[in-house]
Image (tube, rainbow, N blue to C red; front, side, top):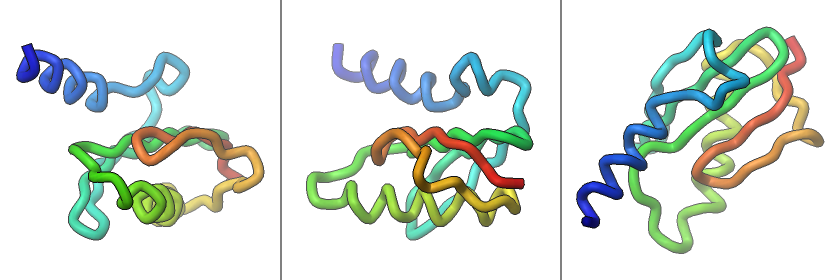
Amino acid sequence: MRPLALLLLTACAASPTPSMQGAQSQTATLNGRDYTVWWTTADFEIVRHGWANPGQHRQIRADMLTLVPQVTGCPILDSAVTGDSGEIHGPLTC
């Protein structure tokens, strides 16, 4: 059962939430971890691929927030960002 659960979780990370359907996307690697970023001119979503051990989540979240402007070319509106080291959503200020 566990391999099936991992497969389903991996498949979920390959698709954006309904609000980001049709958005631009790019997969990128930072500090050895893979992420997918979806974005429009107004919003973004970033998803981490793979497992993270306890104690790594704070750095992963910081890496995700660093990666979004690099990929999109737009600054993030930090005060409105939501999510954790698995998935983060927020507005862009393009």
